[in-house]
Image (cartoon, rainbow, N blue to C red; front, side, top):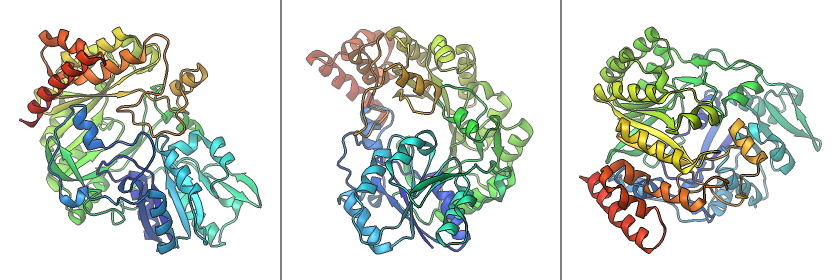
Amino acid sequence: MKVLFVWPEYRITGFKPISISLLSGILRQEGHETKLFDTSIYDIPVSGRDDDKDTAEDMMVFPRADLPRNYETKHRRNFIVSFNNILSEYMPDIVAFSSSTLPYILVEKLVKGIDIERRPALAIGGIHTLFNTEKIVNSNMFDYIVLGDGEAAILEIIEHLKGERKVSELHNVIVREDGEWVSNKPTPLIPDLDKLPFYDWSIFDNEYHFWRPYQGVAYRMGDFMTARGCTYKCKFCFYDNYFKFYNTEKRMRYHSPERCVSELGELSTRYNIKFWKFHDSDFFLRKEEEFGELMELYKTRIDLPFVCITNANTITREKIKMVKDAKCKSITIGIESGSEKIRKRVLNKNVSNERIVESVKIIKEAGIRVSTSNMIGLPEETEGDIRETIKLNRLVASDLADVNYFYPFCGTELGDECYQNGYVKDHSQELVSIRNSYVMEMPQISLETLEGLHRTFQLYMNLPEYLDPLIRLAEDHDNTGNKVFEILHDIIMDKLIE
């Protein structure tokens, strides 16, 4: 059968989504055809769209790299018109949408904009579906609603379309039959990830979805996960409710080191990958012996630079030496907030400032670049708390202190609290970018103060403290503040280009 995957993306990132890569591999292994429709390539006339390259430069996080000309090419046609064109030309048996929360508005517009005689079956999955199930069911837009992991569900849906499987035999799926919705129990989580096929990247554009800038240089990058899950209990993360859906404790599932390296090797060769990004929630969670085996195999058989994400609590000198020897170039650590009160009480992230400082020191002593992820606009967070975040990032001297606005995702404990407390403004018709859009109104801090700290965050990170009085002027969105900001912004960009 023919399956059209839809990735409702509005940023230009050079990223290949893990879920679609795997599902396409599963379907092709069973002899089905797959194709991709990526909305980011097209004109999207919806308020809030941004471009990762331009936004990152505006926010002074890295300089623009010289990317291949083909990377920059985009279709200037309307995304809904283009979607109908591909439906008419490809004539899929089913369209499979994979969506998170922020771009879901694009899914709604695409489905409502279908205007062809032969309407295919429509399925939707992704984390947004699991936590907004009732709204999606009530929309009556889809024939199949996949909850949780989709590896088994996608094949069962295909069998149902072919008349080879009953509705009662569809797991992890809510399906519409005779005008009624039928929901069955989920299947257990796949225990052995090594049994899954390799990613299929043949559905992605050979230029557009591969080239990505890193430190001012363009690389053909690959995206990979060596493990699934998370053992932490952060209130802003979706994993708590994800595991509750499966009625199981929070845990990790790992690909074996040999499987990881075999797949990485094949993908590197087939798609000419020169740089890898690992998307594990915490790359360092493996036990030290197995982690050492993975890094040794990677070093001897892959031997390409990579970046990864971790938690300050799992950093050890031994593991840092292992990744350094394997060509790790940068490690991202989640600070979230420089205020221990906010980090521990509001976010339920049990990491101390002392531990963050020590972990960053270990990484930097090994000669590895350190990036920190930070959020502002958190519940209960004051102006003073945000300045504590600035202070901590300055103290650890991270190479990049990335900052985003907090977003209250439904289905997370903290996001649900924000809706219950009436903090969230209506943004249902907007594309929200956490880099430049804030959707809440908090009683303890004004939007003007928040926006001022957000736009000057990188000024504080990249300029000496004796210039703080000038940076404070740039926090104000008046004539003086805007002029000061423009001058300081240009200084930072000149510094980055150098």
